[in-house]
Image 1: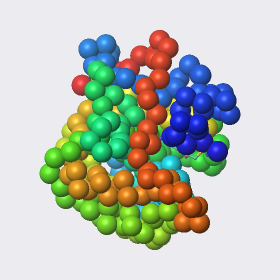
Image 2: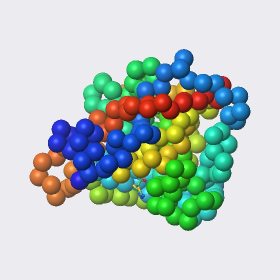
Image 3: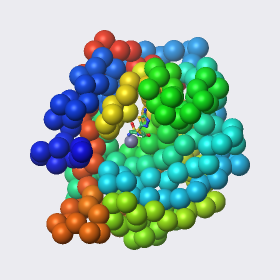
Length: 258
Ligand SMILES: Nc1nnc(SCC(=O)Nc2ccc(S(N)(=O)=O)cc2)s1
Ligand SMILES: [Zn+2]
């Protein structure tokens, strides 16, 4: 099994997951003045109005909100995407007290956390698993989080975290629309990359919003009360620093919408 510790963390993932040393790994450091502006890149459109969250769970690596992806009710389209991609889940990556936490960085600067909304190309692939191994199978929308005032809607998630404290716990979480977690601007950077955790498949079109959202230190601290470990395990490990550091760009182009 893999994790974020000294023995099982990002520096040894390559031992069991060969993609780790691939040519389109994520996350990366985005250097804005090296990004190429591509006027042919349209805006992204998020049709989340009929969206139906199902549950919230602790998978031992992050806290995940799953959606019913049996039809095209919640999709992302436009921008670099040739098809609509269906929303499957969203989850977060965050740091320890007061330090780093995001996976992507911007000119070497990190944010305290990063939200990933994971979508899959149900036009071309029959199942999520098939899509997750294909070069154009997934589209992940990344949103940076910075600390400041309380986020007015994030409490709906942080108030549920105590119910999924332990690895393997899951609880109902219906009717949550992630549209409430978006910043005001949908301007983005985009590049071809991978899952940022094992199996590190190189199947992701990354769309990273330039504008971060804000949450309070108090809301962020509630993520840190989650545990990497299951209830029956004797040593409890606090879930924090569950982020992979930036990976080599290997000649890839990062494009921006505006
Ligand atoms: N062929 C495959 N089927 N299922 C998987 S792993 C399940 C999965 O969705 N993993 C996943 C890992 C990382 C990310 S992330 N952090 O958004 O890049 C998103 C999703 S790979
Ligand atoms: Zn992620």
